Amino acid sequence: MSDSPDETYSDAAFMLAPVEGDEMVSVISDNGEVSIRAITAAGAAQMQATSPVASAALGRTMICSLMLAAGKKTGEMYGEVEQESVQIDVRGDGPLKQSFATADGRGEVRGYVAQPFVHLPPNSQGKLDVAGAVGKGIITVVRNNPLWKQPYSGITQIVSGEIAVDMAHYLTESEQTPSALGAGVLVDSKDEHVIASGGWLVQMLPGATDETITQIEKNIGSLDGSPTDLIRSGKTANDICDILSAGLRDDEVYPATMIKPRFACKCSIEKVYRTIALLPRHEMEEVLEEQGKIEVKCEFCKRNYHLAGAELEDAYKTVTDGGADK
Image (spheres, rainbow, N blue to C red):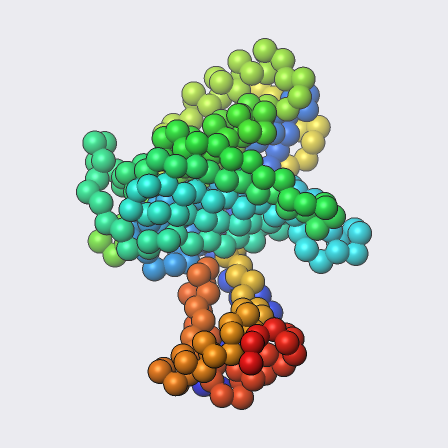
């Protein structure tokens, strides 16, 4: 086994420490009628080498998955290791093809796009043409809890391609939760790194009164620009929550919660073993004869796993004695 970085295996999930300034804050109004979340996450959105428009689409998808997963139940109190998770799968007929992200209540997120090097001219507003890259199609959201018998899945049409608008539409139509959502990623046009990334989510809870709805609409209207505009002006996730909850949290009946989002990939050599063990043995031998090794690449973190010879035999022995044809 090679010692090069892309071939070093670990049983632990590949995770990056939270980037300074990345945070997600969640609050509830004093009357319990509205939930508000805001996030800054430039670090998580920067994980993959992608074109600017692909970075924007993937970053927005990851931000939305983090906000939807915030505050979800964990299995720890029941002796389970797994967390409740939220998956967002955006599939359109645009050149990007797919933008996928999954996150859990701890703020761990990972994602990928099917075509990471798509380049498009700016849209009519001179901004990255995420809608053009995504195109028309569907959004599938899957919520999974280790204690549920089966995941909950919802599907809606892509209505704009800008992802944030589409997710607000999904929450209102599929989950019957009236919602407003903003998500943005600002990419440097020269070196293509993410300058700012973040978003906010407002959800009306059961029993919300017209008075509360009116106040929320006023607060959303008072936001001075897009999520990335707010972040670049110095606003933190907590500041954005304060703006959106103005007039609704004077007594702070429910304390705010904060987590540090970070990129976390669950790939491991054991999962690679299980994948390779599904190959018929004759196919494995054909690949070995042609290439001398089998390479498996993680879609999320782009880590490469190279296996050959005895390692491939280990894959079969580790997973199953009869998992492939002879």
